[in-house]
Length: 81
Image (cartoon, rainbow, N blue to C red; front, side):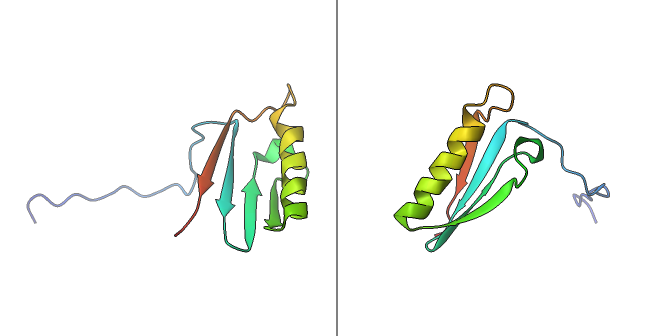
């Protein structure tokens, strides 16, 4: 078929673009936050949207964001509307 392109087989591995990035999936009842695996013993955590839980998220974020050895300098936010 003319003009048809095919994709090569995927290795199943994604390349790292920014090793110092974190991600937050923002939901209406909870947020899921992920940092690089080497930054925390539990690199993916879930926080409910109550103020007390958001304070816990901020405290945790403060630990990995400002640590000179393991700083996170970018954060991607995702909110499916």
